[in-house]
Length: 557
Image (cartoon, rainbow, N blue to C red; front, side, top):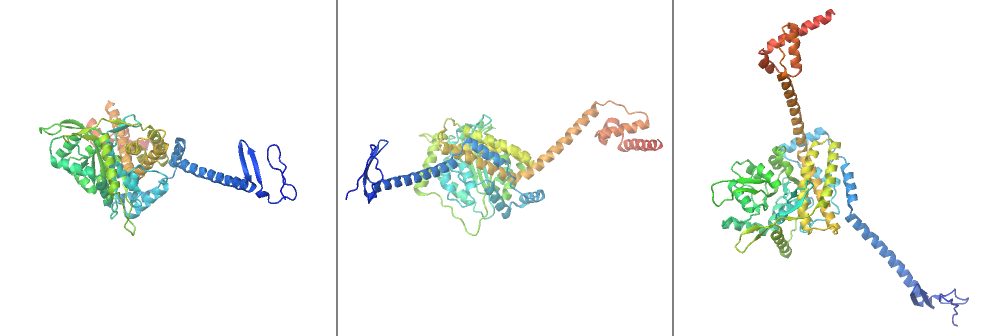
């Protein structure tokens, strides 16, 4: 028996008549919003259910993707709020002032011990997690495969070395002054911490540059050779030759032992001095005038980047006496962790991938540093300026937060150091900005990666420097402040006494009162003797008789 249907004008089926069976196998003809479906009820149900499931899965996928990019692409307002929260955090160390003083004293004498290194690194990683920070090309390849705890030293060392490829790139900083890629890195490495891996990484990636420079030195033909590889123990004459011939292009000084640098700056015949390092950080000029005909003459720009590795003790010897001079604050301090039971591996790019990296370095060097003509002469390229205002905005927030934090901590060292650290972080950011191909305002993800890495490294450099030299800096500042106050008081009193043309009273009572008043104002016995020609015993005698008579007078009254 056939089933009977009663259809409305809109072709939608009504409830089946009594006695109908197999409703799901019946055929229907639906028209809805311009769409038409012809088939069985079962097919309609299956298609409808499938659509609902697919829609739910699609919506869930959309939410997951949106959540991921929301975490990756935080807007400027959110970044500012995060920085303000970070600024209100408690100081990293919870030790008592006495314990901190003891730890810094130990650090200056024998270097950081294993426990101190491990505790500092663990505290910093908890306070400043590095999650969701995407690293620039090339740097990411090495940092992803290095031993745990080596990431920041690897980033810093590669940044200083890669800066040589972008030597003539400039970007305006917060002070509206064009900055260049001036980066100086000192990596502290406890005993048996495999600091040699840093040198092997540099020797491998920059092998072509190193071999080219070796060939240039051995040729010794003419002065138009730019050398970007330098050892710290060069003579003054050789140092000036290289800086002059480089014509403002960076040379990178790398040594696996900070002790070599310590000996170099202490040697009067050596070309590398603390003054040269400070000038190189700011690209100031050095002047040279001598009788050698082929030697560079006149004034030329100083451009030196530094990568050093050494023990904490050697680092203290190199920079401990340069806190006031300013050399220490120009260094980006990093720390390698103490090794555990197993020896970690560091697989580095080789073969075709390494060749691709080296080809890219050569291409960047020719575009942003110098070119070599057919005669083998090296010529600097024209300066190239890039826009990095987006980094400046983030660093201004960071500077403000560091100032507020220095006031809440009562820590003058943080306030004094924040400007220099921000400047160093900006110089590093120029390199990362170029590695990303100068991301535009539409490339939010790349720009955010540059900003995140800049703020993270600024925090690292700040906290490491404060832990290493902060207490000593504050001690020096307190001492200088006290000496300055004493000097001001003495100068003020001396000026007041010099202006005083008062004569010594003739009355013995008034004479004692007169000298007591001068001594209360801070005038010394030597000054009194020079001015009035009286010995200390004579002056004290007048004062003693005055006080004695004053006491008797008070008792009688």
